[in-house]
Length: 422
Image (cartoon, rainbow, N blue to C red; front, top):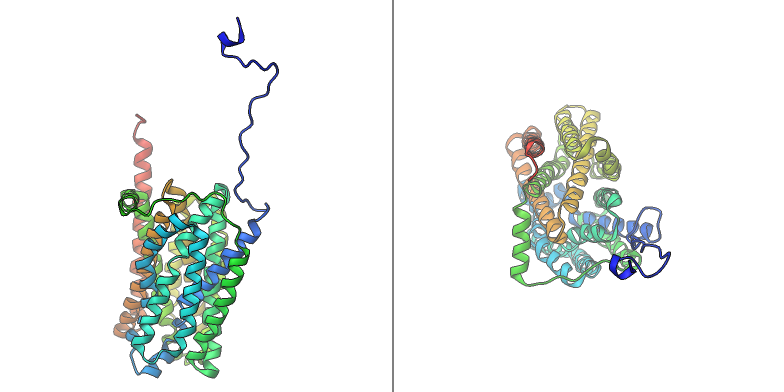
Protein backbone atom coordinates (compact mmCIF):
# COMPACT_ATOMS: atom_id res chain seq x y z
CA UNK A 1 0.00 0.00 0.00
CA UNK A 2 1.14 3.55 -0.67
CA UNK A 3 1.74 5.94 2.16
CA UNK A 4 -1.26 7.96 1.07
CA UNK A 5 -3.58 4.97 1.35
CA UNK A 6 -2.44 4.07 4.86
CA UNK A 7 -2.34 7.61 6.19
CA UNK A 8 1.34 7.18 7.12
CA UNK A 9 3.80 10.02 6.88
CA UNK A 10 5.63 10.35 3.58
CA UNK A 11 8.77 11.32 5.52
CA UNK A 12 10.69 8.16 6.23
CA UNK A 13 11.99 8.07 9.81
CA UNK A 14 10.32 11.37 10.74
CA UNK A 15 9.97 11.83 14.51
CA UNK A 16 6.61 12.88 16.03
CA UNK A 17 6.25 16.55 16.87
CA UNK A 18 7.22 17.32 20.48
CA UNK A 19 4.69 19.25 22.57
CA UNK A 20 5.46 22.94 22.97
CA UNK A 21 7.38 23.63 26.20
CA UNK A 22 5.50 25.26 29.06
CA UNK A 23 6.85 28.81 29.19
CA UNK A 24 5.10 29.73 32.44
CA UNK A 25 7.20 30.65 35.45
CA UNK A 26 8.33 28.03 37.93
CA UNK A 27 10.41 28.17 41.13
CA UNK A 28 14.08 28.36 40.23
CA UNK A 29 13.33 29.43 36.67
CA UNK A 30 14.16 32.81 35.11
CA UNK A 31 11.90 35.63 36.20
CA UNK A 32 10.21 33.75 39.03
CA UNK A 33 12.21 35.41 41.80
CA UNK A 34 11.67 38.90 40.36
CA UNK A 35 7.96 38.23 39.98
CA UNK A 36 7.67 36.88 43.54
CA UNK A 37 9.52 39.83 45.05
CA UNK A 38 7.52 42.37 43.02
CA UNK A 39 4.18 40.94 44.13
CA UNK A 40 5.51 40.58 47.67
CA UNK A 41 6.18 44.36 47.66
CA UNK A 42 2.72 44.99 46.21
CA UNK A 43 1.26 42.98 49.07
CA UNK A 44 3.31 44.97 51.57
CA UNK A 45 2.07 48.29 50.16
CA UNK A 46 -1.55 47.11 49.97
CA UNK A 47 -1.88 45.98 53.57
CA UNK A 48 0.30 48.77 55.00
CA UNK A 49 -1.97 51.37 53.40
CA UNK A 50 -5.24 49.54 53.90
CA UNK A 51 -4.79 49.11 57.66
CA UNK A 52 -2.59 52.15 58.37
CA UNK A 53 -5.07 53.59 60.91
CA UNK A 54 -5.93 50.35 62.70
CA UNK A 55 -3.20 50.46 65.35
CA UNK A 56 -3.84 54.20 65.81
CA UNK A 57 -7.55 54.03 66.64
CA UNK A 58 -7.14 54.96 70.33
CA UNK A 59 -5.18 58.09 69.30
CA UNK A 60 -7.71 58.97 66.58
CA UNK A 61 -10.52 58.54 69.10
CA UNK A 62 -8.77 60.94 71.46
CA UNK A 63 -7.93 63.49 68.77
CA UNK A 64 -11.46 63.73 67.38
CA UNK A 65 -13.27 62.94 70.64
CA UNK A 66 -15.13 59.87 69.32
CA UNK A 67 -15.79 56.32 70.54
CA UNK A 68 -14.11 53.17 69.25
CA UNK A 69 -17.13 52.27 67.11
CA UNK A 70 -16.86 55.64 65.28
CA UNK A 71 -13.07 55.61 64.87
CA UNK A 72 -13.28 52.05 63.49
CA UNK A 73 -14.90 53.50 60.35
CA UNK A 74 -11.46 54.67 59.24
CA UNK A 75 -10.69 50.96 58.77
CA UNK A 76 -14.13 49.82 57.63
CA UNK A 77 -14.36 52.57 54.98
CA UNK A 78 -11.08 51.46 53.36
CA UNK A 79 -11.95 47.77 53.31
CA UNK A 80 -15.51 48.54 52.25
CA UNK A 81 -14.29 50.67 49.34
CA UNK A 82 -12.04 47.84 48.24
CA UNK A 83 -14.89 45.32 48.49
CA UNK A 84 -17.19 47.48 46.33
CA UNK A 85 -14.65 48.23 43.60
CA UNK A 86 -12.72 44.97 43.32
CA UNK A 87 -15.10 43.48 40.74
CA UNK A 88 -15.11 46.52 38.41
CA UNK A 89 -11.32 46.76 38.70
CA UNK A 90 -10.98 43.07 37.83
CA UNK A 91 -13.02 43.72 34.68
CA UNK A 92 -10.60 46.50 33.73
CA UNK A 93 -7.70 44.10 34.26
CA UNK A 94 -9.32 41.64 31.84
CA UNK A 95 -9.34 44.33 29.18
CA UNK A 96 -6.20 46.39 29.84
CA UNK A 97 -3.92 43.87 31.54
CA UNK A 98 -3.05 42.85 35.07
CA UNK A 99 0.20 44.80 35.35
CA UNK A 100 -1.33 48.01 34.01
CA UNK A 101 -4.23 47.94 36.46
CA UNK A 102 -2.03 47.03 39.43
CA UNK A 103 0.38 49.87 38.62
CA UNK A 104 -2.42 52.44 38.28
CA UNK A 105 -4.09 51.24 41.48
CA UNK A 106 -0.92 51.61 43.52
CA UNK A 107 -0.21 55.03 42.03
CA UNK A 108 -3.61 56.41 43.07
CA UNK A 109 -3.53 54.71 46.49
CA UNK A 110 -0.10 56.08 47.46
CA UNK A 111 -1.12 59.58 46.30
CA UNK A 112 -4.18 59.48 48.57
CA UNK A 113 -1.96 58.06 51.32
CA UNK A 114 0.12 61.23 51.24
CA UNK A 115 -3.07 63.31 51.69
CA UNK A 116 -4.50 61.31 54.62
CA UNK A 117 -2.34 63.02 57.32
CA UNK A 118 -3.94 66.37 56.46
CA UNK A 119 -7.57 65.27 57.01
CA UNK A 120 -9.24 68.10 59.00
CA UNK A 121 -12.02 65.96 60.52
CA UNK A 122 -13.05 62.39 61.10
CA UNK A 123 -15.54 62.62 58.23
CA UNK A 124 -12.85 63.79 55.81
CA UNK A 125 -10.52 61.05 57.04
CA UNK A 126 -13.19 58.39 56.44
CA UNK A 127 -13.82 59.69 52.90
CA UNK A 128 -10.11 59.67 52.03
CA UNK A 129 -9.80 56.16 53.40
CA UNK A 130 -12.76 54.99 51.31
CA UNK A 131 -11.14 56.41 48.16
CA UNK A 132 -7.86 54.76 49.08
CA UNK A 133 -9.55 51.39 49.54
CA UNK A 134 -11.33 51.72 46.19
CA UNK A 135 -8.00 52.47 44.49
CA UNK A 136 -6.33 49.45 46.12
CA UNK A 137 -9.08 47.21 44.71
CA UNK A 138 -7.05 46.75 41.54
CA UNK A 139 -4.34 44.83 43.38
CA UNK A 140 -5.80 41.65 44.95
CA UNK A 141 -7.86 40.20 42.09
CA UNK A 142 -5.37 41.27 39.42
CA UNK A 143 -2.44 39.77 41.32
CA UNK A 144 -3.99 36.33 41.74
CA UNK A 145 -5.17 36.33 38.11
CA UNK A 146 -1.65 37.32 36.98
CA UNK A 147 -0.19 34.42 38.96
CA UNK A 148 -2.77 31.94 37.61
CA UNK A 149 -1.78 32.92 34.05
CA UNK A 150 1.99 33.28 34.44
CA UNK A 151 2.89 30.52 36.93
CA UNK A 152 2.72 26.77 36.40
CA UNK A 153 -0.22 25.11 38.21
CA UNK A 154 1.94 23.04 40.57
CA UNK A 155 3.61 26.21 41.89
CA UNK A 156 0.43 28.30 42.12
CA UNK A 157 -0.41 27.72 45.80
CA UNK A 158 3.16 28.56 46.80
CA UNK A 159 3.21 31.70 44.61
CA UNK A 160 -0.09 32.97 46.00
CA UNK A 161 1.14 32.11 49.49
CA UNK A 162 4.13 34.42 48.95
CA UNK A 163 1.80 37.23 47.86
CA UNK A 164 -0.31 36.67 50.99
CA UNK A 165 2.93 36.64 53.00
CA UNK A 166 3.61 40.11 51.60
CA UNK A 167 0.18 41.12 52.88
CA UNK A 168 1.13 39.93 56.35
CA UNK A 169 4.46 41.79 56.28
CA UNK A 170 2.69 44.94 55.11
CA UNK A 171 0.09 44.65 57.82
CA UNK A 172 2.77 44.07 60.43
CA UNK A 173 5.20 46.78 59.34
CA UNK A 174 2.43 49.33 58.92
CA UNK A 175 1.18 48.80 62.43
CA UNK A 176 4.62 48.58 64.07
CA UNK A 177 5.92 51.70 62.31
CA UNK A 178 2.79 53.72 63.05
CA UNK A 179 2.83 52.63 66.69
CA UNK A 180 6.33 53.90 67.42
CA UNK A 181 6.14 56.98 65.19
CA UNK A 182 2.77 57.97 66.67
CA UNK A 183 4.13 57.65 70.20
CA UNK A 184 6.67 60.37 69.43
CA UNK A 185 5.00 62.59 66.81
CA UNK A 186 1.29 61.66 66.66
CA UNK A 187 -0.92 59.65 64.36
CA UNK A 188 -0.75 62.08 61.43
CA UNK A 189 3.02 61.78 61.05
CA UNK A 190 2.64 58.01 61.46
CA UNK A 191 0.23 57.57 58.53
CA UNK A 192 2.42 59.92 56.47
CA UNK A 193 5.39 57.60 57.08
CA UNK A 194 3.34 54.68 55.76
CA UNK A 195 2.53 56.70 52.65
CA UNK A 196 6.24 57.25 51.98
CA UNK A 197 6.96 53.52 52.53
CA UNK A 198 4.21 52.63 50.05
CA UNK A 199 5.67 54.97 47.42
CA UNK A 200 8.97 53.06 47.56
CA UNK A 201 7.19 49.70 47.29
CA UNK A 202 5.12 50.90 44.32
CA UNK A 203 8.15 52.09 42.36
CA UNK A 204 10.09 48.87 43.00
CA UNK A 205 7.04 46.77 42.07
CA UNK A 206 6.71 48.43 38.66
CA UNK A 207 10.42 48.07 37.92
CA UNK A 208 10.60 44.39 38.93
CA UNK A 209 7.37 42.76 37.73
CA UNK A 210 7.96 40.85 34.45
CA UNK A 211 5.75 41.76 31.52
CA UNK A 212 2.88 39.24 31.14
CA UNK A 213 3.34 36.68 28.38
CA UNK A 214 0.10 34.70 28.68
CA UNK A 215 -2.49 37.44 29.10
CA UNK A 216 -5.31 37.52 26.56
CA UNK A 217 -7.52 40.62 26.58
CA UNK A 218 -11.18 40.00 27.34
CA UNK A 219 -14.36 41.99 26.84
CA UNK A 220 -15.65 44.89 28.93
CA UNK A 221 -19.24 44.30 27.75
CA UNK A 222 -21.56 44.28 30.81
CA UNK A 223 -23.46 41.27 29.46
CA UNK A 224 -20.25 39.24 29.24
CA UNK A 225 -19.16 40.35 32.73
CA UNK A 226 -22.53 39.53 34.28
CA UNK A 227 -22.53 36.14 32.58
CA UNK A 228 -19.10 35.35 34.00
CA UNK A 229 -20.10 36.47 37.50
CA UNK A 230 -23.34 34.47 37.32
CA UNK A 231 -21.37 31.40 36.29
CA UNK A 232 -18.99 31.73 39.24
CA UNK A 233 -21.81 32.30 41.73
CA UNK A 234 -23.61 29.21 40.45
CA UNK A 235 -20.59 27.07 41.34
CA UNK A 236 -21.20 25.56 44.83
CA UNK A 237 -17.47 25.18 45.56
CA UNK A 238 -16.72 28.82 44.74
CA UNK A 239 -19.66 29.97 46.87
CA UNK A 240 -18.29 28.02 49.82
CA UNK A 241 -14.80 29.45 49.31
CA UNK A 242 -16.17 33.00 49.18
CA UNK A 243 -18.06 32.48 52.43
CA UNK A 244 -15.00 30.96 54.11
CA UNK A 245 -12.83 33.93 53.11
CA UNK A 246 -15.42 36.37 54.47
CA UNK A 247 -15.76 34.54 57.79
CA UNK A 248 -12.01 34.20 58.35
CA UNK A 249 -11.61 37.93 57.72
CA UNK A 250 -14.49 38.75 60.08
CA UNK A 251 -12.44 37.18 62.87
CA UNK A 252 -9.23 38.89 61.88
CA UNK A 253 -10.76 42.32 61.28
CA UNK A 254 -12.58 42.29 64.60
CA UNK A 255 -9.62 41.13 66.67
CA UNK A 256 -7.05 43.55 65.27
CA UNK A 257 -9.40 46.53 65.26
CA UNK A 258 -10.13 46.15 68.97
CA UNK A 259 -6.89 44.75 70.38
CA UNK A 260 -5.30 48.21 70.64
CA UNK A 261 -8.09 49.41 72.92
CA UNK A 262 -7.79 46.34 75.11
CA UNK A 263 -4.02 46.62 75.53
CA UNK A 264 -4.01 50.36 76.27
CA UNK A 265 -6.66 49.93 78.99
CA UNK A 266 -6.45 48.19 82.36
CA UNK A 267 -5.01 45.78 83.39
CA UNK A 268 -2.28 46.08 80.71
CA UNK A 269 -2.04 49.88 80.11
CA UNK A 270 0.63 49.52 77.42
CA UNK A 271 2.08 52.59 75.64
CA UNK A 272 1.27 53.11 71.93
CA UNK A 273 4.71 52.01 70.72
CA UNK A 274 4.47 48.67 72.54
CA UNK A 275 0.93 48.16 71.26
CA UNK A 276 2.17 48.70 67.70
CA UNK A 277 4.94 46.17 68.26
CA UNK A 278 2.33 43.55 69.17
CA UNK A 279 1.66 43.31 65.44
CA UNK A 280 5.05 41.61 65.00
CA UNK A 281 2.99 38.44 65.40
CA UNK A 282 2.11 38.98 61.72
CA UNK A 283 5.45 37.29 61.00
CA UNK A 284 3.73 34.08 62.03
CA UNK A 285 1.19 34.74 59.28
CA UNK A 286 4.04 35.23 56.80
CA UNK A 287 5.30 31.73 57.58
CA UNK A 288 1.89 30.03 57.65
CA UNK A 289 0.80 31.62 54.35
CA UNK A 290 4.04 30.78 52.53
CA UNK A 291 3.84 27.12 53.64
CA UNK A 292 0.18 26.70 52.66
CA UNK A 293 1.16 24.72 49.56
CA UNK A 294 2.87 22.04 51.63
CA UNK A 295 -0.03 21.98 54.07
CA UNK A 296 -2.50 21.30 51.26
CA UNK A 297 -0.17 18.62 49.89
CA UNK A 298 -0.32 16.76 53.22
CA UNK A 299 -3.86 17.34 54.45
CA UNK A 300 -5.78 18.34 51.33
CA UNK A 301 -7.76 21.55 50.98
CA UNK A 302 -10.55 20.69 53.42
CA UNK A 303 -8.17 19.19 55.98
CA UNK A 304 -6.10 22.37 55.85
CA UNK A 305 -9.21 24.51 56.39
CA UNK A 306 -10.23 22.42 59.41
CA UNK A 307 -6.76 22.88 60.89
CA UNK A 308 -6.78 26.63 60.18
CA UNK A 309 -10.21 27.05 61.76
CA UNK A 310 -9.28 25.03 64.83
CA UNK A 311 -6.07 27.00 65.32
CA UNK A 312 -7.95 30.31 65.05
CA UNK A 313 -10.61 29.20 67.55
CA UNK A 314 -7.97 28.05 70.03
CA UNK A 315 -6.27 31.44 69.79
CA UNK A 316 -9.54 33.29 70.38
CA UNK A 317 -10.29 31.34 73.55
CA UNK A 318 -6.72 31.69 74.82
CA UNK A 319 -6.84 35.47 74.35
CA UNK A 320 -9.51 35.69 77.06
CA UNK A 321 -6.84 35.10 79.71
CA UNK A 322 -5.74 37.93 81.99
CA UNK A 323 -2.07 37.23 81.35
CA UNK A 324 -0.34 39.30 78.67
CA UNK A 325 1.80 36.30 77.65
CA UNK A 326 -1.31 34.18 77.04
CA UNK A 327 -3.01 36.99 75.13
CA UNK A 328 0.04 37.24 72.86
CA UNK A 329 0.06 33.46 72.35
CA UNK A 330 -3.61 33.67 71.44
CA UNK A 331 -2.83 36.35 68.85
CA UNK A 332 -0.10 34.13 67.40
CA UNK A 333 -2.57 31.26 66.92
CA UNK A 334 -5.28 33.54 65.49
CA UNK A 335 -2.79 35.02 63.01
CA UNK A 336 -1.36 31.65 61.94
CA UNK A 337 -4.80 30.12 61.46
CA UNK A 338 -6.16 33.10 59.56
CA UNK A 339 -3.33 33.46 57.06
CA UNK A 340 -3.17 29.71 56.40
CA UNK A 341 -6.92 29.56 55.81
CA UNK A 342 -6.86 32.63 53.57
CA UNK A 343 -3.98 31.31 51.43
CA UNK A 344 -5.68 27.91 51.01
CA UNK A 345 -9.08 29.38 50.12
CA UNK A 346 -7.80 32.07 47.72
CA UNK A 347 -5.54 29.64 45.83
CA UNK A 348 -8.44 27.16 45.57
CA UNK A 349 -10.53 29.88 43.90
CA UNK A 350 -7.83 30.46 41.26
CA UNK A 351 -7.51 26.73 40.58
CA UNK A 352 -11.28 26.12 40.45
CA UNK A 353 -12.11 28.89 37.95
CA UNK A 354 -11.20 27.68 34.46
CA UNK A 355 -12.29 30.98 32.85
CA UNK A 356 -12.78 34.52 34.12
CA UNK A 357 -10.15 34.06 36.82
CA UNK A 358 -9.97 37.78 37.54
CA UNK A 359 -13.72 37.88 38.23
CA UNK A 360 -13.54 34.71 40.35
CA UNK A 361 -10.73 36.20 42.41
CA UNK A 362 -12.54 39.55 42.56
CA UNK A 363 -15.64 37.92 44.02
CA UNK A 364 -13.46 36.22 46.64
CA UNK A 365 -11.73 39.49 47.48
CA UNK A 366 -15.06 41.29 47.66
CA UNK A 367 -16.42 38.75 50.13
CA UNK A 368 -13.11 38.81 52.01
CA UNK A 369 -13.11 42.58 52.53
CA UNK A 370 -16.82 42.70 53.28
CA UNK A 371 -15.89 40.32 56.08
CA UNK A 372 -13.14 42.72 57.15
CA UNK A 373 -15.53 45.68 57.25
CA UNK A 374 -18.12 43.64 59.13
CA UNK A 375 -15.51 42.36 61.58
CA UNK A 376 -14.14 45.86 62.25
CA UNK A 377 -17.59 47.32 62.87
CA UNK A 378 -19.28 44.43 64.69
CA UNK A 379 -16.13 43.65 66.68
CA UNK A 380 -15.95 47.26 67.91
CA UNK A 381 -19.65 47.28 68.79
CA UNK A 382 -19.29 43.97 70.63
CA UNK A 383 -16.30 45.36 72.55
CA UNK A 384 -18.31 48.44 73.53
CA UNK A 385 -21.18 46.24 74.72
CA UNK A 386 -19.36 43.32 76.34
CA UNK A 387 -15.64 44.02 76.41
CA UNK A 388 -13.05 41.70 74.88
CA UNK A 389 -15.28 38.68 75.55
CA UNK A 390 -17.87 40.19 73.19
CA UNK A 391 -15.31 40.50 70.39
CA UNK A 392 -14.13 36.94 71.00
CA UNK A 393 -17.74 35.72 70.86
CA UNK A 394 -18.16 37.25 67.40
CA UNK A 395 -14.95 35.56 66.27
CA UNK A 396 -15.92 32.14 67.60
CA UNK A 397 -19.26 32.31 65.75
CA UNK A 398 -17.41 33.13 62.52
CA UNK A 399 -15.03 30.18 62.98
CA UNK A 400 -17.98 27.87 63.56
CA UNK A 401 -19.31 29.12 60.24
CA UNK A 402 -16.02 28.18 58.54
CA UNK A 403 -16.08 24.67 60.00
CA UNK A 404 -19.74 24.16 59.08
CA UNK A 405 -19.23 25.25 55.47
CA UNK A 406 -16.14 23.06 55.14
CA UNK A 407 -18.09 20.12 56.54
CA UNK A 408 -20.82 20.70 53.96
CA UNK A 409 -18.13 20.66 51.27
CA UNK A 410 -16.76 17.37 52.62
CA UNK A 411 -20.23 15.78 52.48
CA UNK A 412 -20.84 17.12 48.98
CA UNK A 413 -17.55 15.61 47.80
CA UNK A 414 -18.48 12.24 49.29
CA UNK A 415 -21.86 12.29 47.55
CA UNK A 416 -20.18 13.02 44.24
CA UNK A 417 -17.95 9.96 44.59
CA UNK A 418 -21.04 7.79 45.11
CA UNK A 419 -22.81 9.04 41.96
CA UNK A 420 -21.99 6.74 39.02
CA UNK A 421 -20.42 8.44 36.02
CA UNK A 422 -22.77 9.05 33.07
